[in-house]
Length: 354
Image 1: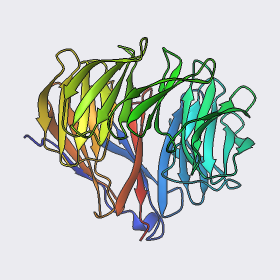
Image 2: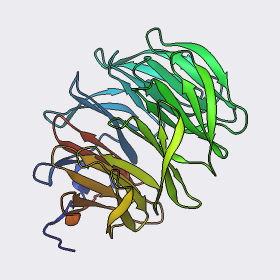
Image 3: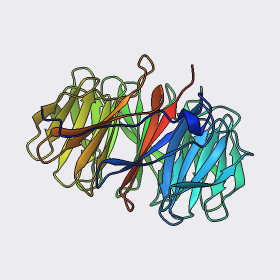
Image 4: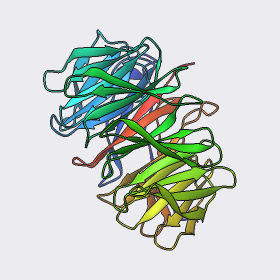
C-alpha cells in the first residue's frame, strides 16, 4: 500500500519533565501536527469536546484540564477532582455539563462556569456511563452490582435503580431515535426503555457482544466473537433482522456517508458494506482504536497497547482504503483520542507511566 506521508513528532522533553505526557493536536485537513500540549502528569487523556464552549476536556491524575480549541492553549484546571483516566466521561450537550467518574461517585462539571457544581454518590466504583439525550438521562453501572443506575440530568439526582439478573451490564449503547439503551450481558443483549426506565425482553446472543448504534438505519450492530459475525438488531422491533459474517470486532466504527462499518482486529481492518452485508475490503494496519473523520472521509487508526513503546497513528482514506500517512507519537504509549468535528482536529493523549 502507498505511504505518501510519514510524519513524526519529536519528544518535547525540554518543555516539561521526562515523565510529562502530551496531548498531540492533529490538523485533519492537512494531516499535520498543529500543537503538542503538556497538561501535567504521566498519563493524559482527551475525553470530550464541547461545541458550546469550544473546549476540549483532558484528564490526568493531576486534575481536569480545559483547552481552548481555537488556540489549542490550556486555559483552566479543576484541581479539586480526582479523575480516572481510561474511564467513561460523558458530555451532556443539553445542559453543557461533563459527567466525570471518580471512584464511588460521578462529579458534575459545568462547562459554562468551568467548575464542579454537583456529584452523585453510588457507594461503589463507577464502571461505565452512557447518556440518552432524548430522555436526558445518564445510565451508570458500578462494580459488582447487577443493576443499571439512572441519573436525571435535569436535576443531577439518582432517579432509580434497574435490577439486571446475572453479571454487571457492560458495553452500554444508547439508541437515541428509539430512546432505548442496549447493553451486553451474559449470552444476550439487554434493553432499557429510556422513557419508562423498564427492562424490555432481552435478545439471546452468544457471549458478551460489542455494540454500536447506526443512527441512519436505527439499528444496533452486535458483534459476536464466536462465530465472528455481526447481528443486526432493528430498534423498532428489537429483533435480529440479519447476520453478517465478519472477522475482527475488537473495535467498531461507522461511516454513515458511505454506509460502511469498520471492524478491527489487532493487525487488520475489515470494511463491511451495510447495503450488501459483505466484507468488501481489508487494510493491513495495527490498531486498537479508530475514529472516522466525516469532514474529509478519513479513518484515524491508533495502536495503543501496553506491551509496546511509542505507539503510532495511521491515516486511511476511505474512498480508496489506502494508507496515506502515519504519525509517530511523543510518549511511550498513547492514551485515548477525540475528534473535534467543527474544528476538524484530532486530539491524541499520551502515557509515560512505567
